[in-house]
Figure 1 (cartoon, helix red, strand yellow):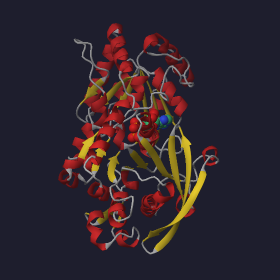
Figure 2 (cartoon, rainbow, N blue to C red):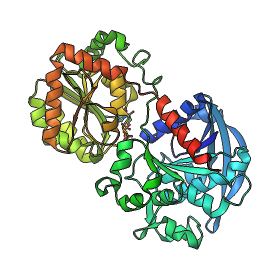
Figure 3 (cartoon, protein in one colour):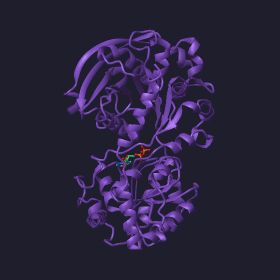
Figure 4 (tube, rainbow, N blue to C red):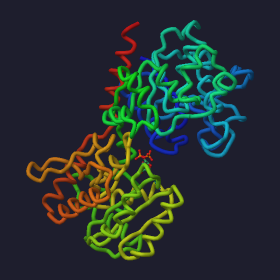
Amino acid sequence: MKVLFVAAEAAPFIRTGGLGDVVGALPAALVKSKIDARVILPLYADIPESYRNKMVFMGSVNVPLGWRNQYAGLFTLEHNKVIYYFIDNEFYFKKKGLYGYFDDGERFAFFSKAVLEVLPLMDFYPNVIQVNDWQTALLPTYLDAYFRNVEGFENIKTILAIHNIEFQGNIDKYCILNVFGLPRHMFNVVEYKGDANMLKAGIESANKVVTVSPTYAQEILNPYFAYGLSDILEARKYKLCGILNGIDTDLYNPLQDKSLFQSFSVKSIARRKKNKKGLQSMLGLPESDKPLIGMITRLTAQKGIDLLFAVSREIMDLDIQMVVLGTGDWKYENGINELNSYYPTKFRGIINFSAGLASQIYAGTDMFLMPSKFEPCGLSQMIAMRYGSIPIVRETGGLKDSVTPYNPEEKTGNGFTFKTFNAYDMLDAVKRAVGTYFNKADWNTVVTNAMNLDMSWKKSAETYISIYEELTSKD
Ligand code: ADP
């Protein structure tokens, strides 16, 4: 089985969030299961020199895009037993960062088309091409429009993976013919509610649509979650399914994480204490055994930051400490700074992006708050559980699929949950967690349950493989 992942980001080369984590980990897990999984990315200027130096040039092609012809160079590199390819075009990708340019639609349309044009250079004709999010969602449409009669392309099946439906690649419909260069008879595939919608084109053209958790696959049929796409998804429900992401359990391993004050595992939970002390002293919070609640997050509306602010006084009145690490919207960053000045001995907010500090927070906090408005999968709650910090989450998307509420009768469950997007329901879940914390036997059970949960990619990889087999068995 040969699978090509097409994505706008992948760890460790370049990433801005969960998408990069998934594309960095899933292909490696598939390779371990004997699938020939490879990955292709844009060659951004920000990909570190250390990787660029190892890349080998494979050739170049011209990519027709509307009325233009654009150069596409192809480079390759093997990393962690996975073969990676990179599309080079300095006009589109020699820029700072990944996204946020006025011509993003054109940049990623080019990338999607270029991937198909360079397949002969790779001499790798996959059975399945898996595209990810809006940036690469036009590829299945290009495949249908221009490549179906080309030798090697006839039987390629396509999967669109939706990591977050909020971002759709919405641009002027003028671009469908003039920039994307799609034929007139395919206009309707891309056009949606008066715009060009790249994600919608993927939903229409891909053979299968996968989201990153089973609950999110259900939720996006509902207008509250679908950002305008619920009716098209309802019509294409027959090809929609959800597979829960895993995490890289080698990377996120409290026994080997070099950033920690003290390594530990589920067999030595008591050693976590040193991480709590180390974190408190580093942050200038009083060293104490009070419950320490953490958040590591993008500071955006999706992550439920409004709920935190709505009941911040009530939370801070509890006998707890709290640390928040994040960057994002200006109004939320300001709010975090205000909490710093109101509660200097109880609250520490750090406006920064730091992987090392994130590890120290996962390992040093007792609880991890994630009250998301919606959460396609969420990796943070899984990393928190792996490090023994107990998640307090809203029952949405992947949070619902990965966190089971603690049941003190049966001693089952690995976290605390609440249903509605309501600050007082969240507060109630925080209080339940804090209450349980003071019952040491129960707390030890919930931490053990969380750390024992299998969050590796193995299970998800097996489910993906069964989908690949199902798709290709019809040939
Ligand atoms: P999303 O992809 O929606 O931002 P996820 O929970 O899926 O949310 O993934 C977020 C990832 O980014 C986690 O690995 C988390 O630890 C990391 N992260 C988020 N904010 C920060 C930050 N300020 N510093 C370090 N890591 C962060």
